[in-house]
Amino acid sequence: MVSIILLRLIFKLSLTLHVAHTQRYFIELAYNGTNYHGWQTQPNAITVQQVLDKALATLLRTPIETVGCGRTDTGVHATQLFAHLDVEEYMVHGASFVDDSLTNSEPYTMNHELSTMNHQPPSIKLKSLNSLLPYDVAVKRIIPVHAGAHARFDATLRSYEYHVHFEKDPFLHNLSWLMRDRPDVTLMNQAANMIMEYTDFSCFSKSNTQVKTNNCKISRAEWVTDGDKLIFHISADRFLRNMVRAIVGTLIMVGKGEIKPEAVRQIIESKNRSNAGTSVPACGLYLTQVVYPYLPPNPLKGEQEEPRHNDLQKN
Picture 1 (tube, rainbow, N blue to C red):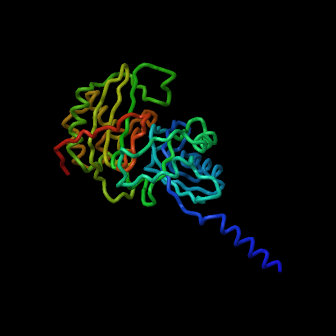
Picture 2: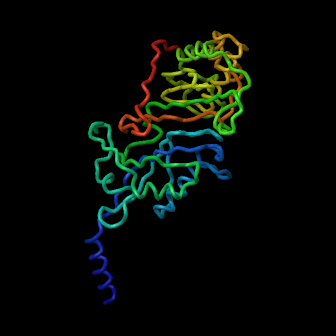
Picture 3: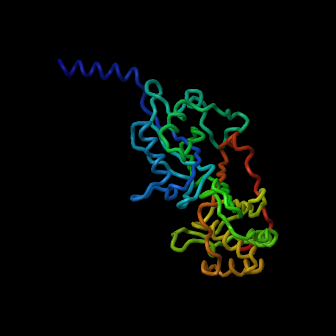
């Protein structure tokens, strides 16, 4: 008798609940990396991924493991970083991860026209997630995507900035590198242009990273004056561990007159890390943009950067 009643209850429940389906989401976030040992979760250190996964697990009441678009080192910042996660959702009962207007829309795919993508207002869940995160980490968007979308492997362009200032400023502490003397920007840009002629950047890579190739396609490498500051802009399809900080350190050597711009060619062609400059401090480095072919740009960040391609490519 008891078993019959249980079966009836299970049958009624099956009529009101649809089978759970898995939805993949991209999360866009920004963070001040001063207090973190980089992005990627580590067993004995606090990282950005760790605090994000913990907040998501609290919100969704289930263990969560995000996959990031890459990794940033200790003390490095990001104004735009993407991670993806999978969430099991019920079509009828149970709360969705984001507001109904967004989850009911078609997930972004390669064939989805940009003109049909509507930018949704922040949802309650977005605000709830941010309330669970520390003050130095903020989620900007939660975007439903197709099941095969991958935050790391699908990125077609990544951009970094390195910030340098020359007068002591308490409001730039841990957010920019303080240099004593201003380097020659013209010489540094001459050397930066030479860097774009190459694709093998073994000389700027951290050793023993176990990557399959040290080839990267750099589409922009340029120093820009911003008031009393200098900002180095660099964009590529991918970056090696410690690559940007090693490039900046080498260009600073050029700007200080320690080596000639032409010496950068010899350094790159040597494929030897010991020939390049010392890596600059992490505090001035920012991941600023990650581009995907199926995602619309964040309207709050403006237009996506147009790559500045150099026709000269040398292996």
